[in-house]
Length: 227
Image (cartoon, rainbow, N blue to C red; front, side, top):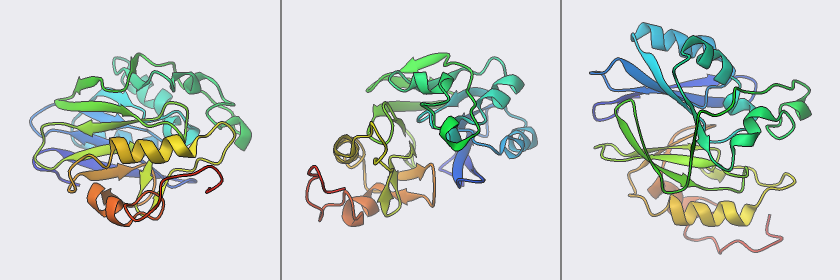
């Protein structure tokens, strides 16, 4: 998945169809790994094939399918910090909260090395991101909005999908926060901004603003009981 100059390669993992991303600039020797899932062999193969070390592991949120590979990638690259939203960090080390225990395979991740907050700027591996917190699907989910690139993109996790949104029907979820967060913090980006989600195909901000059946411009604002 080439950008204007950068490269982003998706890695889809069974059994949940979760998508991790490896991103790098060709003129550097480092890379980002975003939401490493269960298929760490492919992630490590991509890194080896392109001769890249991991500068950071970014987690959009702490659900099991998005953090399953944290320990393996961290073991291979001990200097790579695990980065996650401040209000999401406890999921890494709590098998109940990260939803691995309820599926019968409890596990945890190494703890976060760096916590980020809404509005914070993150500079890593030659990329500059603005962190935007959009809770609802999880307590403190964040998206990473790339800044200063010709082909704009956002690592969106499980917030906004092509034609859908992240689930927000589990105990403690907040669909109102999710819907309003998408409208306030993603739909204010340029139409051409590529949304790289945690499941399913990539989409654009403009496409979802116009047509998304949950949060698109033709859909009335969320009211309790709608979903």
